[in-house]
Amino acid sequence: MFTIRRAAVGLTLALTIAACGGGSSFDRDDAVSDFVDSGLTQDQAECVVDAMVDEFGEELLASDAEPTEAQQDAMIDLTTDCVLGGGVGSGGDSSDGGDASSDAGGEQVASELFSDTDLAPACRGNGVAGASPYTPGDGTNLTVVLEGADPDYGFSAVVLPDGWESDFETIGDTELVTCLNRISATPTEVCDGYEDEGLEWSVQLHDSTYEVSIREATTGTVLATGTYDAPADGCPMFSSYFEGDPNPKPDYETPDAEIEVLLAEFVTGAAPATVPPADDAPADTEAPADTQAPAGGDASEPFTYGDDAELDVLWDACAGGDFASCDELFFVTPIGSEYEEFGATCGFRNEGQNVGNCISLG
Image 1 (cartoon, rainbow, N blue to C red):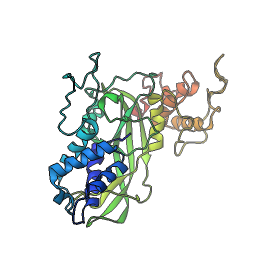
Image 2 (spheres, rainbow, N blue to C red):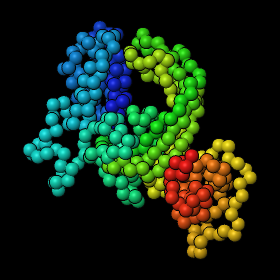
Image 3 (cartoon, rainbow, N blue to C red):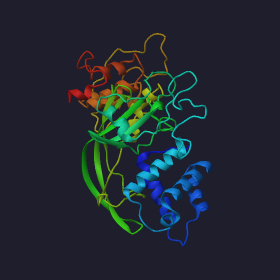
Image 4 (cartoon, rainbow, N blue to C red):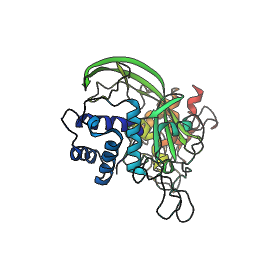
């Protein structure tokens, strides 16, 4: 399935046009092949290329000229029409004269391509029109991940397991919005040597810290939070750059493993088998005595301190005042376990007034 993100389409199309340039004439078959290689079907690729020829002409497409911002926007619209709108100029009309956004039962069928700005209100506590209500335990609840410095968010490059994100990139498929608010970024290494089509640039790496929140798309309601560090991880192999971008271009690592742990319960209804350990956890935290698994419970599931080494790390960190670890412990441990209770009470510091939000105590 071809997945289209507005933040990436301009780059894809610009690179495709650049690949077509430099010759004496425009080669339609080569251009179609490039789009098919990028994930479009043959019909979609032919639609996009023919629409580009109609819009810009073969002479421009065969040139080495960099697309302007207006041209990139036009390319995005053309691609959207061909991939999701049934072809350029379709206008969304159905062949039977009905509303293409409704099915036979009158229920709305979401088919509108969304942008990052459509979803960003959820990160600010507002609902997103057209999104699907979050229903726990009802199959896989798809998410979109946004990243930025509040209140500005854009699509994130966070890598999640297959099937967790909205495959069709439509608002109606989306029940959750995962928001990465970058609260600090410390510059580290500068990476040089990036160039393309006569442009040369550098990349500025950063050690970053994020406040991550998982929210219901329809309401903006917070379901879970966590604060995670993401240190720079070396110079990227690839970097995109458009004229007018800052140079050096900032690069921010993301805490993908921690986000996966935080999301698992809400996307799939089950926590992953392993939990990323917290840093600098105190080793001498006193564990509770005389605790045991509940009668009739699953003996294979960890219940209290000492049952699972990785959960013990979170317990120790929570006891030492790392409230993000308390929240993480609450979200990833079995329901009814003492691990869960310890996380819910922020390390037995209260009676559960900050369930899932112990970080607010810091």
